[in-house]
Image (cartoon, rainbow, N blue to C red; front, side, top):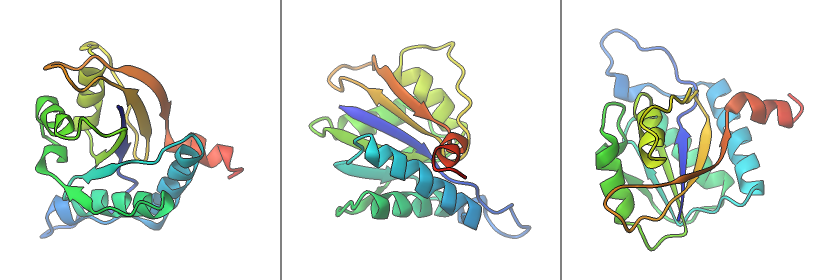
Length: 165
């Protein structure tokens, strides 16, 4: 199974009186997510399922990815992908989709830095998971603990450079 981790794009700053969960993507954030997803599609990304944090900026990112990837399923919203969730909780969620070929997870920091090192069984690994970045991990979801292989990592700034911007 291939598990793709897509961090949400650049979001608006927080505003007094508004919850962090309702922050929306900026136009720049939307653009960068599209660029990253287009490159990933060219590299073979065609998810069987898209799971997303229920936070607005993550749902918007997942919606952009679904459109660019011509994904016809429903977005699966899960609390397991909120910013301060635990990697073990995400792993339990991933294992429920173990018969899938590709699973796209859309979420946040600091979760994705911790999750990537957990899935790769590399506890001391430090990943700078910038906004809009996408990682592909090949993993066998049958075990109780993951042992993934990093196939590639694409920061959003490289996607823009690739498309000539």
